[in-house]
Length: 119
Image (tube, rainbow, N blue to C red):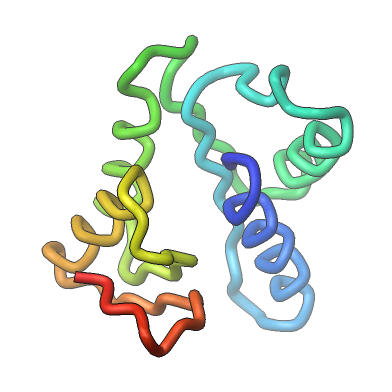
């Protein structure tokens, strides 16, 4: 439920749920009230997803330096596949994609650059 790809992917999943039987949308929120720092537009989108999700899981009561790593680990540990928009940059997405690969999850990277070697 982070800004950008997470929220956009959740919106796509909500739309797919209307077309594909069995699609479940689970909103994994790193810490309570994280959306308060978002712009009003992103807050609106966040709140709509939370309201329409089949389940919402908040991992921490407040922000700490570890909340996003905890969220990333939770996602990999509770998934059977990973869909990423990963351009090869260092950071949380790189960590999560590497962890998904090591965990033998099916990985689909929708970043489109045939010249880029990720690892």
